[in-house]
Length: 574
Image (tube, rainbow, N blue to C red):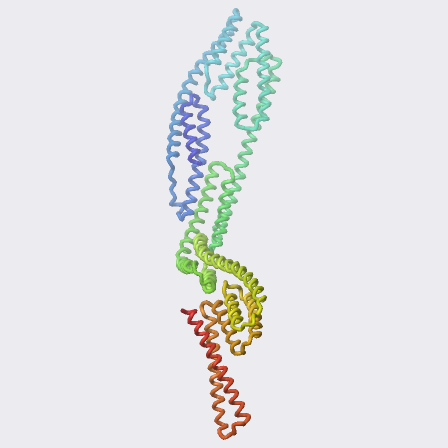
C-alpha cells in the first residue's frame, strides 16, 4: 500500500515538473514532501521496532531506503532546482516590472500639468492604467509602497483636475460598488472554515481593493473605516487560530512529558519474571501508541521530547532482550524434557491398547504440567504438538468405544429377541434330541458380539435359569447336569475372554480346590489307622469311609473340570 502511494507521488511530481505554473505546483510539491517525510518517518520507526522485536539493539539499527525513496528524492531535488531557476527569473521580471511601473507613476504625476487638455489627459490616464494592469507583478516587499504611490498619483490626478464631471462621477460610483462588494466578501470570510483559504482570499481582496480607483469624497472615510474594521476582524481570527495551535502544541508537549515520566517509571521497576515483562511491554506499547496519537509541538521541543522518549524505550527493550537471552539459556533443558514427552505421546498416539495407553497418556500430561514454561512462543508451539498427539489417541479411543457401544446396543437387542424365542421352546420327550437342542441353544446364545457387563449378567441370568429349568425337567443325574452347566460356563468364558485370563483363573481355582480335596482324603485315610482293631460296623469308621468316598468322587469331578478347562485354554492359546 505504501509503495503504491509513493508511485502515485512520483507520477504526480513528474507531472508537476512539466507544469507551466511553478508557483502553484510548488504548493502541491510541498504537501507531497511533507506527506512523504511523515510516511518515511513512520517506515523508519516501524523498521526499527521490528529490528528490536527480532532481537536487535536500537543503536545498531540502520534504515535502508528503497528505490521509490531514491526516485522521489531525486525528483524533489530536480523540482527544487527548477523552482530556484523560476524564482530567479521571477525576481528579474519583478525588477523589470518595478521599473516599468515607476515610469508609469511618473507619467501619471506629469499629467497634472496638462490642464489645458483634460480630455487628452484623461485618455492618457486610462492608457497608463491599462499599462499598469498589464505591467505584471512586483515583489511583495515593494508592492504596498508602490501601490500607495500609484494610488496617490491617480487620486492626485482626479482631484487636481476638473475634468468631465459626469465621467468622474460615473467612475466614483462604479468604484464605490466594487469596494462595497469587496467589503461584503471580506465580511463573508467569517463563515469560511479553512484558515488557509481565508489567508489566500484576504490577500486577493486586498490586492483588488488597492487596484480599485477612488470613490466620492463623502463616502471615502466611511468606506475606509468599514474596510479596516473588516480586516481587523479577519486578522484577529487568524491570530486566534494560530494562538490556538500554539496552545495545543504546549498541551501536546505537556502530554508528551507525562508519557516520558510514565516510561521512566516502567524503567525504575524492571520486571523479574516473564509475566512481568509481558505486562510491562504491553504498558510501554500503549505509551508508544498514545505518543503517536499526540499531536506535534514546536519543532525543537518536539524533537527533544521524542529523543528522550525513544531513549527510554530503547533502554527498556535492550534490558528485555538481555533478560530473554539469559532465560533462553536456562530453558534448553526444559525444552528437551518436553520434547521427550512429545516423542512418547506421538509414539503412543496410534496405540489400540486403550486402558494401558490411557494410563500412560494421563501420566504424560501430569508430567508436562510439572515442567516449567519454556517461553510464551516456544511453549505454545510445543504444547500444540503435544496436545495434538494426545488428542489423536483419545479421539481414536472415544471413536472405538462409541462403535463398541453401537454394536453392543444391536447385540443386546438381538439377545433379547433370541431370549424371547428360547423361552417358547418346549421339550419333545426325546432326551437325546432335547439335550442336543438345549446345547445348540447355548451355542447360539454365546455367538455374536460383546455387550456391557451389566446387560450381559442380566440376560445371562435369565437365559441360564431357563436352561437349568429345562435340564431339571430331563432325566439327567446331578453330576451330569453339573458338567453340562460347567461346559456352558466354559463356553461363555471363552467367548467373553479371548485372551484366556478368566479361564486361567478358573483353572487355578479348580486346581487349588482339587489339591485341598486330595489333602482331605489323605487326612481321612490317616485317621483310619486309629480303627484297625475296630469292628466293621463301627459308626465312626463307617462315617470316615463315607467321607473318603465322597471326597474321591468330588476329586474326580474336579479333575474332569480341570481337564475341560485345560482343553479350552489350549484352544484359546493356540
